[in-house]
Amino acid sequence: AGTTPAVSMDTGYVILLDAATRQEVLAQTSATLGQRPFVAGAFVPSRPGDGWNMDACRRQLDLVHEHGGTPVIFQSFGLTSQPAPQIVETYAAIGRYALRFIA
Image (cartoon, rainbow, N blue to C red; front, side, top):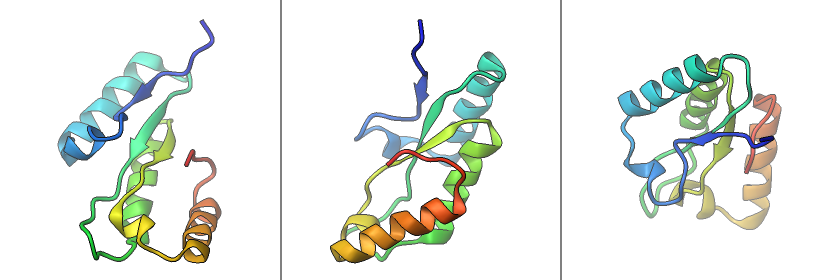
């Protein structure tokens, strides 16, 4: 139908998935779709007052890429608590690391 499947998404729910469930969802999606494209949520857990954790972001990006998907960066306290210019630089840093992503 020309649509791209999306997994581990939906603001408010992606944060409820533990690491094992995220891994299983990606493995099942990849196995089901083969080489066809899909997108998947990439969420870095944080709490109010936490700083941005680029290493955790890289792990989420890698996890989605390893299964053939395109990561969708979800907002988090660590990301959005930065000053606006730093948020832009954070997305630029993500872009330098990831071949592709959606934000």
